Image (cartoon, rainbow, N blue to C red; front, top):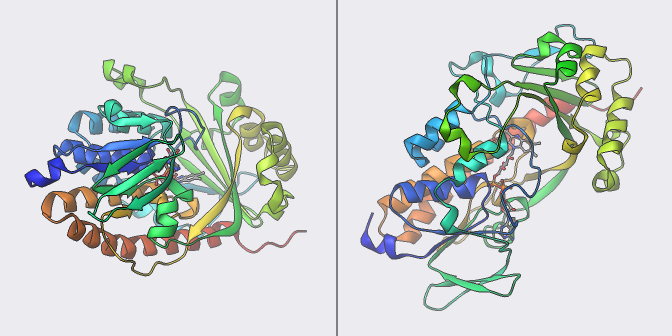
Length: 394
Ligand SMILES: Cc1cc2nc3c(=O)[nH]c(=O)nc-3n(C[C@H](O)[C@H](O)[C@H](O)COP(=O)(O)OP(=O)(O)OC[C@H]3O[C@@H](n4cnc5c(N)ncnc54)[C@H](O)[C@@H]3O)c2cc1C
């Protein structure tokens, strides 16, 4: 690292998983940055409940986090096991080809399963003074002296030497500067969680109470994950985090028609509406499976359309770049979107450290990132094909 880098004004737009991971990587190496997040606080919105972290994602987190936070991350993950149960809607064993990136059975180290908010809270530790909440990027201007002027919706501005957009799927910098084109795949995900109350634990099949299970239906699939934490590891470092308790995470992924939904319906559904859709879809399923939805936390139910970036061509590199969903959105069917954001963060950190010239660091990052993210997008789309199948309503 050169003295020059420590004096550079680095702005990260978005305090999501990728932006915070990058900020941690920079901080670990003595480089300052400022993070601008549009939400008023970290837990303003619900954003899924568990996240699968694969080996490359875990390595990237280890590179970016100081050891005490990496250890806290490892300790707060739910128990994970190699392999997964593939079952039918009547809970019989089924043989089904699975998504390549999920093939836990052939991996030596099974994917880790952190609670998403917990991971985000860990990524936030030590950065509190560097984050401005309630700052939504509205536009930016490249000045003649190589500076970038950021404009926020509250009419404030900030001048930076390097800008990294980590502002997720609707990123303007991703779309305009990095020419990232995203399309609606036409599929959706419906997800929620069911706490391990004594009633739910009694009613839900014991085979769903350990590890990951997948049910492949008629142009949709259901994935369930038992999120069981090891509270014997709890120490004072857990006090930094919102309390967690055991739960089942479950997510349907598929064609909206399989749920009797029209595309325009997605955003208008309340938790009760979603619960009703699921009841209709799961009629005739094994009661020890439908118990998952009967006991679900209604507030946790969400519907999200699945979007995907198209393969990318190079763009002109400079001192504005992007990472994560901002520049490569992918279907959750692959379970690698956040993992790819962590890899971006680790690579960008390493490049900034090892190059005197920021534009060289960015250009090398972008060419490598385009390559591996194009592959991750493709794997995720293939995963979707396996999970959605061909829709033939009976
Ligand atoms: C149901 C579901 C399950 C998933 N499961 C997995 C999984 O198991 N494993 C996996 O690897 N991936 C998974 N993903 C994908 C993963 O969630 C994303 O790839 C990941 O969150 C991307 O991180 P990010 O930091 O790029 O964006 P985000 O996490 O979306 O963060 C973007 C941040 O930018 C902020 N922001 C947005 N606009 C602005 C603005 N204009 N100005 C300032 N701030 C702004 C947002 O508020 C947010 O905090 C899943 C996705 C879904 C929908």
